[in-house]
Image (tube, rainbow, N blue to C red):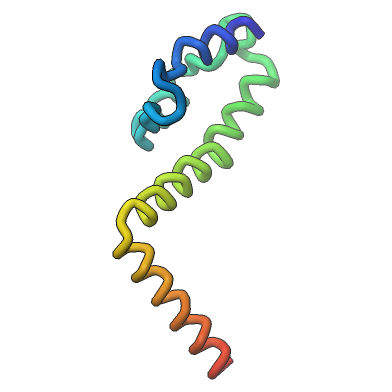
Length: 97
């Protein structure tokens, strides 16, 4: 447990949440492959495979969705276009569906 607490405190940004910069998908994949999140005494145990499964499924999906949301909301034009396309799609679906 102290391994993860030390790791979290080392990675915390000095300015809090507002100064945090998310890692890229490439950095995320490098981190997962490096196994830095796994203490040496857990190598070969079930915990390793459970966390590998998480990092390669829900973890990757969460990072990708987070980036998509951040990209969409970063510019007003993008969200307006997305809202317009969604509204047209719903209208067409209700009209012809």
